[in-house]
Length: 224
View: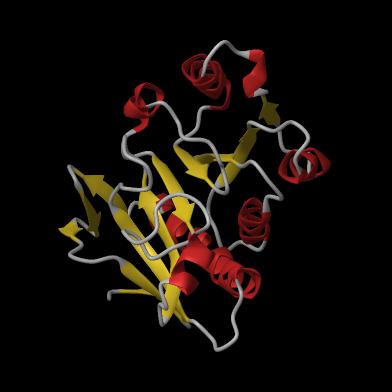
């Protein structure tokens, strides 16, 4: 009997509490996500995500930007560590640095990010407050391929929720986080199974161009 092929290997990047990272860990443990989390990378050695990974026995690489002369030097050093973990996919899950396009380029089509807005709306920070200030009826999260421009790569899938009367940035963020924890594993599952891929500047599902992002529904991801 031949050995089963090794599952795709993920390296997760995080800067804060790591809730999306932990959602991925749980999905792997429950058998819902056919991948191996090879390591957690961070720009904040003291953050909760790093502590959680170490407690779980997951290898960590955590470098301090202030130890490097410039942003590009930090990014090169961080990405130089990847070879040891042989990742098939890089997942930015609450990683709060803008990465140098030069380090991203070799990973085109193999690096994704989860962002708390319905892209192309509200790239960057403070997305919940911006959605409320604009009077949006709906808010959400997007998983997209990472490119040279901030939060501008092709969007794979989105989770949408209605803005409730009286919502604050904090309540909106808390409700959206629940959806993020479903959205990110669902997208990675499709990538791991070879069903989602980047084709040039667009996303393909089962070999066919995806005209619009998939939408998270009660039963999982569906065509929008």
